[in-house]
Amino acid sequence: MIYRFGDTSVDTLRAEVRRAGETVPLRRKSFDVLVYLLQRPRRVVTKVELLDAVWGDRIVTEGSLKHCLMEVRAAIGDHERKLIRTVPRRGYILEAPFSSKAPAADQRTSILVAPIKDQSIDGDSAYIADGLTEEIIVELSKIQSFRVISSASAMRLKGASETQQDTARELGVDFILDGSIRRRGDKLRVTLQLSQLDSDDAQWSERYNGTLADLFDMHDEIARAVTKELTMRFPAPEPMDREKLEDPRAVESYLRARYQMWRFSQRGLQQAERHLENGLDLVGPNTRLLATLGHVYARYSEIGLDPNGALLEKAADCAERIFELDANSSRGNALLGMVQFHSGALRAALEPLERALGANPTDPDTLGTLGYLYALIGRNEQALHLFSECLAIDPLTPINHCMPGFVALLEGRNSDALPHYRQFLKMDPYNSFAAWSLGYVLLRNGRHDEASEVIGELKVNHPDSIMAQLADAILSGVCGKHEATRNAITSELRSAAKDSELLSREITHSLALAGETDEALDWLENTVRIGNVNYPFWAQHNEWVDSIRGNSRFDAIMRDVEREWMSVTSIS
Image (cartoon, rainbow, N blue to C red):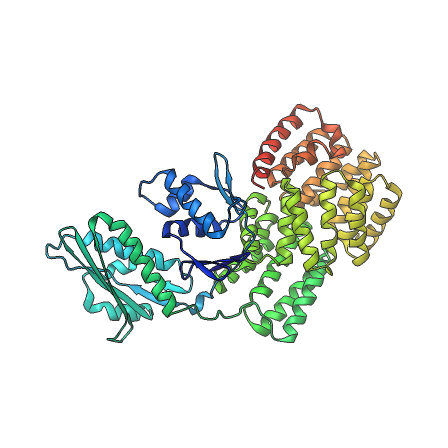
């Protein structure tokens, strides 16, 4: 994996940091700390977690960790501590925006690290040999262009050298790394060689000398040297592009599917599904097509058309198929986040979406979904940044134009939100979600007559849709028609809203407007359970819950919301 940010690149294959084209020396433990943070961007990594991950069972002090971080910051030029930020009393968070590239899993060089033999005169150094074998396997396993036989399997070859070639052949490996260790007193000599399967000629060999006193440092030195040597001799092959669409018919299927997907209608989603299946029939497994198909399945849930979760399971299956093609696929991580989001698990969705964005910071679907999630948990500034990026990259997708308006609504800037939603409907006038959204924002701005007209057209054009039912409930609530509000919240709408943040939130509003305090609080609790913890929105900027303010149960919910909101915004 190669991570890039600014003029810096971190190559995990070569265990190398480069700045402005020059190699920057960095000790192994410091390098491991940097890589661990890069693999977990934009989340707090605790000191205990870092110590466990990098040093394992070895006893070291926090001073060692701090020294490594000092070296890392110097290596990447983070003199102002903005790229790796210290979170007081908690740990560290990597804020650097970066891109990354990983090799394809199906073209990896396969390696068997045979158990290193103890050839000491006393024959009492097997534990040293086994430890070195394990250390080399661990280090090589970090290189994604290699397929390394696990230590559990490799150790089964111990004492069975006559079957080593046969076993390697059965395992389908390309190379065997073996060697020996000799100990005399406290002095150690390690000899290693790399051979191609069925060949007597060594591709590479090396000797290392040391003492028992520096055993662990010697392990580190050897493991890192072997890793560097192998990556230089067998660089990662060009990955098979499982995303590119060269067949023009598949490209057309993909573009048509994306257009229909954003129609927010059952018919549109069904057509999108057919287009994507046609594309997959044409080109076979493809991460772009599978990710979009999974997105379509997840979209059914968002608009209340998957009450039993069967289609979300199909979306999860698409994610699994993507990871089979590319274990580090950004599209796979984005889809996984969407599945968790639409399953009502917003907190769980955060990590895969952030991982997807770190790997591919220009994917509009990831930008939009993660931005929406940030807005719901109260990280408004970050949400606006992602929405701006999304609009710059994908300005012709209508829904992208309304997203900055969503943040404005959450901040109580209702008039600022209106132009964004007008643009959304103008670009896609027959979209049920666009019509619902504009009607909703007009009601927020007190423009009831205009809202009634927009919602009336929605009910004519999409009479059986969940969005029409929801719009009817909210309009009735705002207009003080309490019985009509209650009637509009059908059992179908309630069932669809169970794991939908949007539907749950707006049922809360409708019932609060209708004076149904207890049930409104039930749905507020459900909305918070799903993950909407934007405390300023609920506590300050949302006049539609005024009727339940001051209720002791509302106050208790808000105390919980405030605590969680503060915890997630303190690391933003």
